[in-house]
Image (cartoon, rainbow, N blue to C red; front, side, top):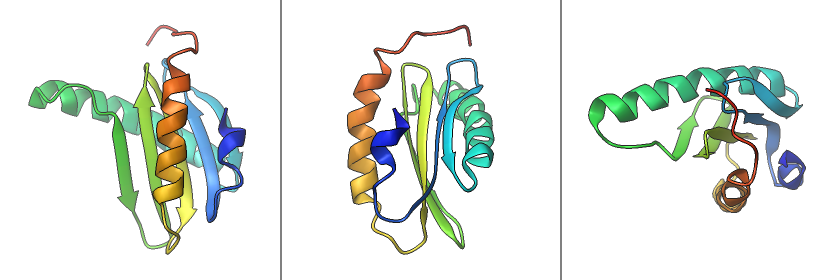
Length: 111
């Protein structure tokens, strides 16, 4: 699934985290680290949504000194891309939104 994101400008790492919080796929330098951090963030996002009564968090974006991370959550999965800082993230956000629809077709594990 994450192969569809490889050609996007600026992408340095990709990760798909499963419903059980374990990495399903990761690619690129830092892909394993991105997967691990997305798994941790997934738990936090679920807790924030519950505690605030805001419902399910479906999109996450943050910026650091060197990368911008965009991620979507759907059907219990979290799919994210890290891009080199300074690249326009719109193409990645659009691609992630399209792939979020495909995540609903993946099997749901325990989580």
